[in-house]
Length: 116
Image (tube, rainbow, N blue to C red; front, side, top):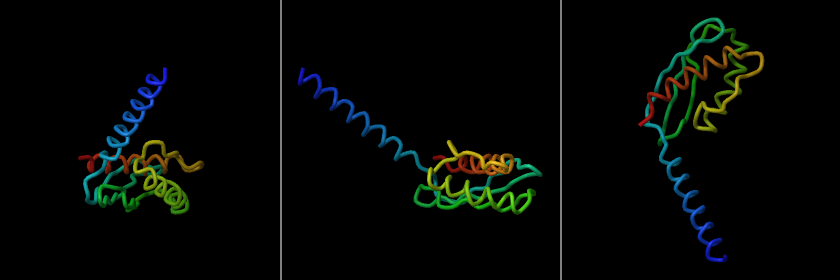
């Protein structure tokens, strides 16, 4: 019984190490990438900067939404994209759903270009 338990623990440990190694290898190509998405009032354009295989910055360079609405999106969504290193699982800002979706769509488009 002890040997089976130790074997199961060892197998689980190896699977965990392998999965984190695969995740660590899932990085981006360095560079600056541009993407576009649909905001509430029109097109949103972002640039995503990748440095050392990681998202270093996301910048909204053009938009047609109100500045106040977009500022809320910038203040909330961009830090989360950088923290998570993906747009997956990043929620829209309440009251600025369409602007949020525009930034997320544009960021995803840019990150798709950065995939190895």
